[in-house]
Length: 295
Image (spheres, rainbow, N blue to C red):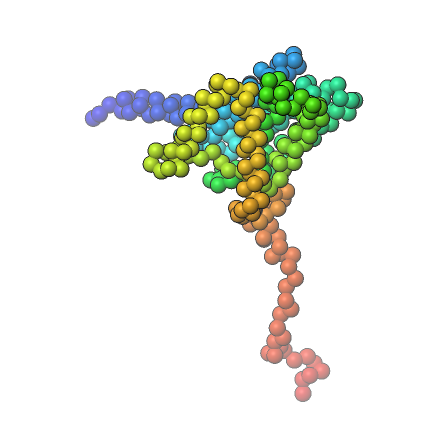
């Protein structure tokens, strides 16, 4: 008779390993939350450029946690909800506060309303994403993704401190520009403009090779000249989505169901069938005769 202890030990090790793999995506998600809160702390201290780079790092963490969950097949409804709540802080609240402390704080008593409206748009964007696209394979995003929006807004301050900005946009009112930028990004987040997902890298096809080359070039540029890369690159991505949508139209079919409904589609259809008026039953010629009709 064989000893079952080694199999039991091996099974326990496999269970512990799986628990570790399941925790890994959530660890990256919470890492993004840590970076978002840290960015808020830097923004309150006036270290706005550093706060912007922390939001960029949070966007990288947000991309990694989703990919890790897919590759390890450890995605869950809990992870999706946790990711959305973290994104509300890291790409909603934190970028809005960076622009508020950088440009809007001295713009009037009610200038903080612009930051509030941006946060509202980010919250709506994430709620709609959870209903429409979370957990499914995506060809395009409906509306500007919140990590891109947060990175664009957060790195605007660093870009305005470059010699290029002072040489070409010295006459631009930075406070007005920051306010208009925030509202423009907020509108794009809640719009139906289609934005492409990050392409897959591969050496087998020319498209995959081109995507890999652009990724390597972007990484080198990001580490070499971050203040010249992140904000212009995000503006380029935003412009590409707008032009693509205008020229090609809304090719990807939008959801038929109302995303504001709480019921599942099957429940909605069942309710419609119950409330639909029923046709009158056909007359039955074989009904029994009444007393007056009897001979």
